[in-house]
Length: 111
Length: 117
Image (cartoon, rainbow over all chains, first blue to last red; front, side):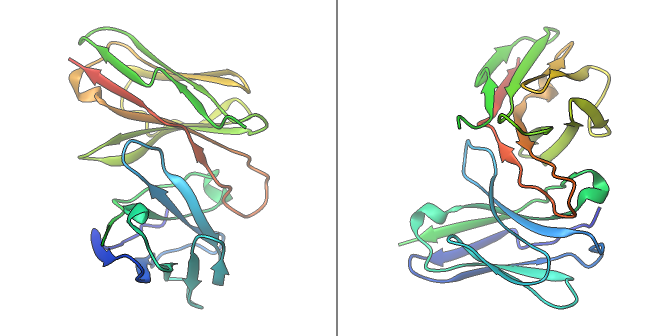
């Protein structure tokens, strides 16, 4: 399984755009990139998933360069409620849908 | 949909006792996952099932841990005997593995916080 590396923590202020970058140098051809969000005392929650280029949904955008060795989760205009841990994962059906969670990035949003 | 349901939400037990955690996946999902989360080790995958069949249990820490999925709507994770180092939050997740090349979204339950004294 591809290993991911992401910053341990990030700080931001309300209304700012936050970009969290994840490195996955040994991503496999059939691997997708998925981001989850976890609030304290809750299970992780799916945010967004992509394979290449750019994916956007109502919550975030995911930018994936052509070599796919990294990806960037972009959260537009964060609020206090976006304070959470964000996990970057790579995986595919080759592993039977097995996902490995790293340490994640603790995002703290302040006023 | 009620989402993934786990019970109990909190469990406090004494070392040596048997502990059984329960999970009801989302109806229609054919994959079920058990995770353990601690401050030291983060979120670890223990075992997962596809169509009620255990596919990979390499994350199960030792023989004291066992998991079953007797039908598509129910799974248990049992620890016997329990030890203080088993204290953690245990999450169950389910997904609908469609057989495509995508990694299907996993939906997590609220977790069971286990404390072994």
